[in-house]
Length: 491
Image (cartoon, rainbow, N blue to C red):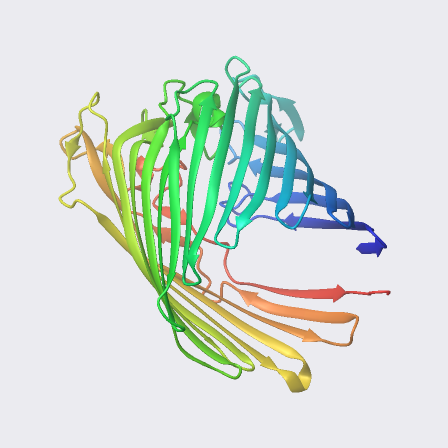
């Protein structure tokens, strides 16, 4: 619902999702996709007049996930778990134009997240439930985060503008699975510029200065983006950025143990740094009337120091670790055709990664390749039938075979680097939207047309954090939907 009068505006919305789960045994227990109920709501109040634009927005979520364990036929009991999450996100955002050359924008955000774990033992003979007493089985974990960001935009001339600002990010956590009620805060000042020496060249350099409460950040973090218009049909873009990421609180302290996960935090994690390079060539060979054909060729290369990733502690428990040297590289080709009633795209990407583990633990390297590669194809076709006010959309995605480097035990019972491969699979959705009149529209469609549920994995049983057997859950099968939308505008 949306309402606006003069400079004041109000928007609100609500959503309810009730999912009964998928898979499991004959009694509806041990489901691969857990039953989940969600209630979501939002509201926004805004004021927009003259040089001032300000709004306050609140989003709320209540989520209830049910996980029913398998029946123990020795005593006819089962362990059930319930995960109840509540999240409230508040944001105050505003901008003010002092003049045509100077503007200011500010964002203040606060998120409060609470997750309750309730574990019970169900007795089928007595039809009773009792609370269990194991570690972490009755728990409330809380996370809060605060964000403050102010940016100024100052235009010195048509060829040069500056964007200085400050940025503060703080998060804290507490609960039985959180050690010592920790808090981490980032303080940053930054400045970027937009330089246009000619109408065909645009360069955006930037510098960021960070002070982290727990980790030593680099004295300065640089970045640069550039665009060169070669002619009316062709433009070239390059970018470089140095990255710094301190570990998140959940990676340091959170003990996340349930029926699907057994992950413990690692308080000894180091901060992650990276160098990232990207480039793209965009070509529009045909553009006439309502018909446009575009081709984009892009590539990237990333190099990480102390990348944060997963490591197995034993056959069932996992934690986070730092990888000394990790690299990712790849390229993609995107094609897009737009006509009067037609919008179609076809894209191909090929991505590879390389990882070298830290030296204080010895692994036998069972991998004979520097990079492991995986392909992906995306395609979409949309067509409008104006005579009946209907839009048809077909989406398709092929995920190629995905190799993954994992730590585990080889045939000689040694700690080793192994390759786990997830088989290729493809997904497709078909939707149709019809405008009945100026107030009502109807949507129908089929999701997961090929009815894909699982993809086989060669090493998931012993090296996956989800302990899901020999298959990776991809989807919960083919489904159909019908939607009805009512929109009423009053001027």
